[in-house]
Length: 395
Ligand code: NAD
Ligand code: MG
Figure 1 (tube, protein in one colour):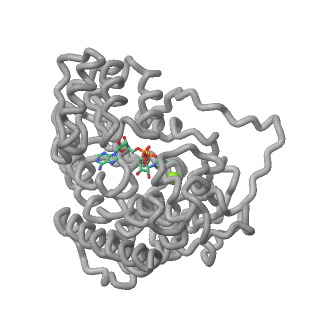
Figure 2 (tube, rainbow, N blue to C red; figure 1 turned 90 degrees about the horizontal axis):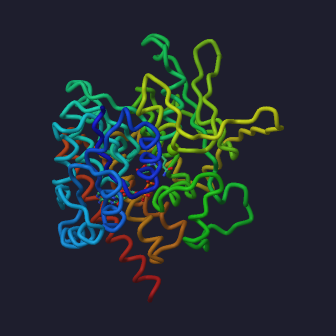
Figure 3 (spheres, rainbow, N blue to C red; figure 1 turned 60 degrees about the horizontal axis):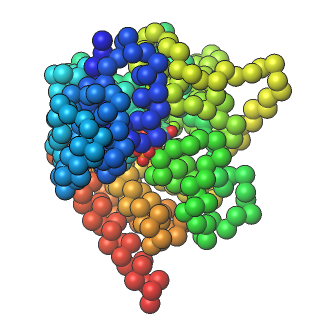
């Protein structure tokens, strides 16, 4: 039995993960479940899964968690609260596998602690790779941790690189596919005035709010370029992005001879989750099979970085190195939150990212502490930018 800690259990990925785990009760046991705020959902999951421990990210939510657990009549489950509690679950001896589905840089510390403890890490939280970079990858290597990518594009690349030796890998080019988000197919849309509601309506994937906005700005693909660079050791110049609105090809690897290997499947995150869970075995995950007996059109076009500048900013941040990608990620998180709260416009997210990146100097951040400090500093500066913008709007 593999003992699994599911961080971010109440979210979109968390829900898909539990669906896959439920199909294989003979192989997986849920040892821990965590979330940020939704204590009622966490308590009902605890009733269903009977983990040894549940945790909420904020200490002030502990009493609410206790009450929610009492309401559903669950006893014998340890209840913890605070960021440190979640990080300690990630490194716990009682856990073999950490399914990291927290959203944002809040996932950094648990990912580092799981890596330091040599865990098998099923990684959906791309922000921890974007910020952790080579420091995280190096830590995982030295401690024998295995990072398996849940992000569908990286999972596709991972599958297409199977059996590829180091020499062949040194020359590959990666093509990350991108649905284009809700606005790609609507060039008439005035992006300056789009509402959060419209930006959240993704055409092919149903996901959490933050990644849905990232998909609308193409920042998601930008973060994924950086993520791919670190996970697979391929330089940014050899990572391309291609708009593929059908979301059937999940990404591609081009080899030196010109062969391109692609992974195709329906748009269902249970597939990459199951691939990581079972790896190297393949598990049934309830995923609808592609129907090649019916007509299917697959199209590929280049992205429009003038309309969606955040994708270009990600390449710039990657080239800058050091704190560049940490600053970009933090500015984006603050910007997305401010946009969702109605404080800034959709295009302001990119303006904020550019302004913060222009101030960044790419100094090295080679320890977790340095990374966390760069993240905090960038958030402070981004919050100031939002305040000034909001004040100017009100004036
Ligand atoms: P979500 O918003 O649906 O869920 C996020 C989870 O993280 C929730 O359980 C929430 O309670 C928890 N959380 C939020 N803030 C936290 C904090 N400060 N500390 C601890 N826990 C916290 O998000 P999601 O769509 O499931 O995405 C999760 C991660 O997976 C993101 O990094 C996202 O980029 C990545 N991802 C998601 C998808 C998808 O299809 N949803 C696909 C690829 C990658
Ligand atoms: Mg993805």
